Length: 621
Image (cartoon, rainbow, N blue to C red; front, top):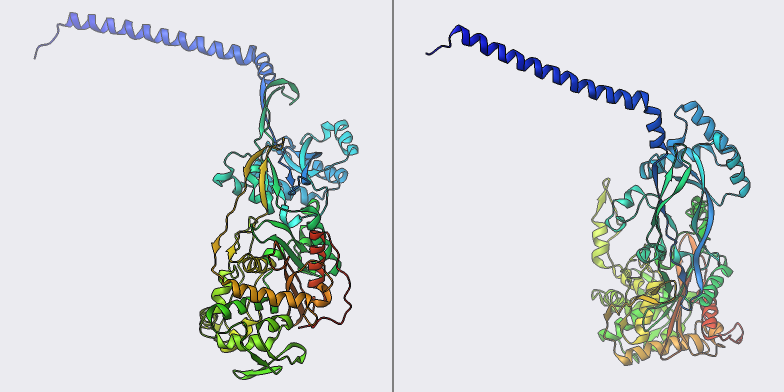
């Protein structure tokens, strides 16, 4: 291998050393320059640059959008907005020292009259959603004395601020409370939902009623304001503003006067109950209410009481969630099943001696009534239990009653545009037998298998039947309009703040049921005689009403509670435009409690009053 001479090797090593030394010198100089510059910026000029940075902080404020108004069908305001002062916390401005933080919260508790436990509970709940920067609303509608005090003592409460915010206003208090629902701040779970992806912490969404169902229209678009603040958080000037876009208004199908009449009729009885008034042709809900009711303004303050059984659960919307047996108001459905199946005709004579033996027991008429030989029209007029007991026994094993109940809208959701609707139940042999063959902890869930007695009970709306006033109103409406199963709805139209239509809410019929016109006429004729012919079950209430109607009482045994009261009525007869269904828990006879409430609602609708026919015209069942 070739090797360099010693003289060349020495020359190469000398050149390399020079280059390494030069590189090292340059590196030292560069690092010295950088170090000196950093020292200059941080030590000599640090205060100057820190002050400049503090003087140029930018704060982004989310501007909430006012929600749209909720109006009745005539444009009368049911819900709108007002501004109020809110006490808000900014957790990151609280003292880091736990002792000092506790002292500040205790001072706040004393002046704002908010328990410390409640303040801490609110902070624990909202910080994961809103973060340490907040702001977290602790209390709305604070008075000006508190505002002035906090301004004068701002240094003692660095973690607090007062802001003007929008809140819902209910000018008519409890009017349609179960329909409109409430609003609340969006939660961490809500923000994970795609439909709320445009929202931010602190925004409000509907949490019940049409506030929730039509939230996308009512909510509006929040705005953003960017401001410059100094190191103390004091505003130095606005940088930019994107104004919020108010939500659209929602017109309901509700008629405020009819709604108020219905609620007055419920509250006059002082019992838990509900009513529905609906257009039979298109499903528009003219009035729907539940008693006891509540003022949405008090929702958050009195939630425990509003959801308490001790107070009959005012939050429960019995019109769409009250699953009850229906009693004799179910008889027109059984009658339709018998006629349409050919099991009986309108003129088939049936002996009603007051009692019939079916299965292993005797089945009696209410009040031990004896009606003799009757046809269907008379059976509906006097509400003969024996007639329908016999028809129920004859239809045993065919599921005709169950099938017709389902066709008319019972035992399933009606599709109303309100959250929380219950499906109810129309019992079948399979349902009861499946229940009987289901075990929990080694014991049967059901008490017995299906028997003929179940079909007999079903025929008069007793036993395991579960329905609510809206479902009964839908069933009668389908009978009244000749077979169109309409979709009940409370939303009518979305309009902007200038009253221009944004979107019509059109919900067509869900189904068409073929009903023989002669059978329809027979049943409606029997209900008309029940309401307005001497001897009819509700003649003493409707006998003097100047508008012809077709209605049916119902009295339901619910041991150990007192009987439940029902009334469902179509008007005007024979081509009805409106159906009204009323029910009262612990209300007793249908003619004594539910029928007068329905009369009060129809009187408002037709702007007419009933004349008295005395107290001797009606039979009870």
